Length: 337
Image 1 (cartoon, rainbow, N blue to C red):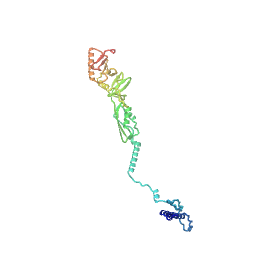
Image 2: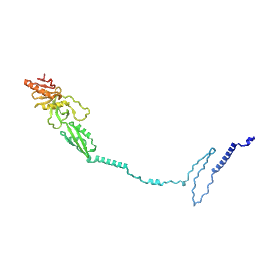
Image 3: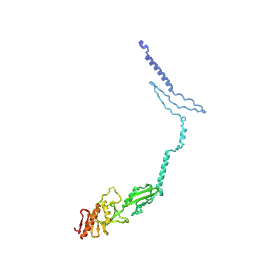
Image 4: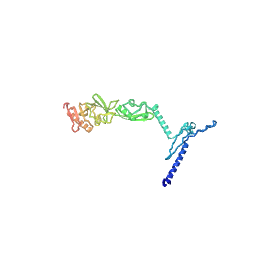
């Protein structure tokens, strides 16, 4: 063996020392893992608590391995953990505090009760409305179409009430509805005032100064009767109008009726012809026509009076006198002319 092999190097000395230490650790480990013999039973009069068996833990680093063994505790050592705080909370009541939410709840309850009284109490239920301004239409007839009987006054819709009135009575121009608590309804109506009774094809319509027509109802003093042989020119209608009276005569024709009515000779009646317009049947034996509008009506009347005087002075008996155009009036002696 060479002398170099007899002399240990420093690295070999360290390695041998580690090997010897590793052998010692293994011997100690073998002694620990040996199961110890059970101890002798303690005396019966003095019980002792037995600790749970816990397996040893073996740990190693590079040359060691670690083993963890779980051990169950004994039944005697398992005690239910009770909490005094938990038991007290299980039987305690919530603490009630008064704040803004309670005020809101009381306000909601009050509103619900008030609404209930408005709906159910008879003092808040409407029965019949007080009608003002009516003349030809009776209050009972108006109340039958309102639809307010035994309804809560707080829920009535004035616009709907006015709509029902105008849809049922064309002769009513408008209605002002006022609802007062607890249950008072006041309605002020405005009726159309007829100026003429238009007779055509066996039917009669009343016409006001604006040319709106509606069925006759009741009595109307000083009403002018117009006997028509045909329909008048159609006026412009409002497409948005759904209820109420409809326009029947043009405004200028209605104005002409109002102007001619005081000038009608005694015993004469107003007539309307689709070709010649408005006029009257003179009791002296002719038909007088003044056109379809009220323009220059005073001039037309003067020309008519002058023409009648001239024909009477000459002994001419006309059948038709037309002054629709005052600058070019004409007359006819016979119906065939």
